[in-house]
Image 1 (cartoon, one colour):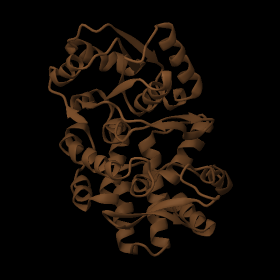
Image 2 (tube, one colour; image 1 turned 90 degrees about the vertical axis):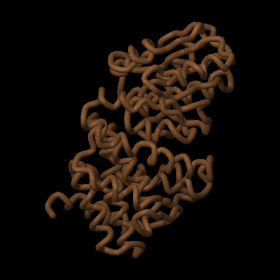
Image 3 (spheres, helix red, strand yellow; image 1 turned 45 degrees about the vertical axis):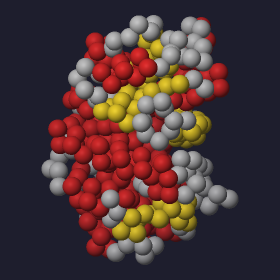
Image 4 (cartoon, one colour; image 1 turned 180 degrees about the horizontal axis):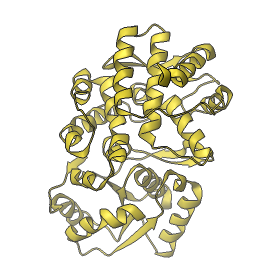
Length: 348
């Protein structure tokens, strides 16, 4: 399912040759159109007619209004059930494109060509598609596998450092929940730039794919992939609501610090081990000022988290570096302590 492309994209061209697609629709955004689309088009070798669908960049576009516009465009262009959607872009594009394709005419085929580290190591893998509802992350979506994921690591060279660093958070998460060796290798890197992280992408993708293969619809072990995301998504949503969006990986890094401390407060890991994890995260990620976010505002989002059952907040918490529990329920008191810890961490 995951294929690394050569410089001529021959694997993609072979795939298109083998399949019977009536038409191709390439979904991308303005940034990718400028930096990555020319590379794809310059190596695309197919007689199948194609159209370019372009949206504005940013998480703000991942909503039902954009999805509706794309459904309308597909309809106007007479896309049939033998059409193919190629999602060329970061997490917003692969989430959105997968959702649009999996729901249009009850589902047409799509492939992902991730252009960011976040999308390569996380969003493009696993068959989760979705859009945001109001300020709730990925509240509406489907489980639908892409036909194939094609990875071209050189696309990372087009990204600013902070975008690569954002995706690096998901790689660190994979190490924390499932592979201590991967975590140790990543935390030896002085700086998570494209050159440094490329040799580790395959391992990170394999970790996520293995978890997904065991539990596609997130009934059990796949929930561990949500480590750092329960509080991280709340922080990301509040920043978006205030009109001051932060990168997904930055919010997840903050969430991982909070949830690592929560793991310690719950007696699941030692203070020493939690300190090692938090120090590493602090080394790579800037502090996010959440002093304007009240606990009540955070809890309003936490209580609406998709993983909850019966109004109880379910966390995935660490039991050691490389091991994680899921469906762990914490008291509000402990969650508030974790939030307080993060607010004060910049003064420690």
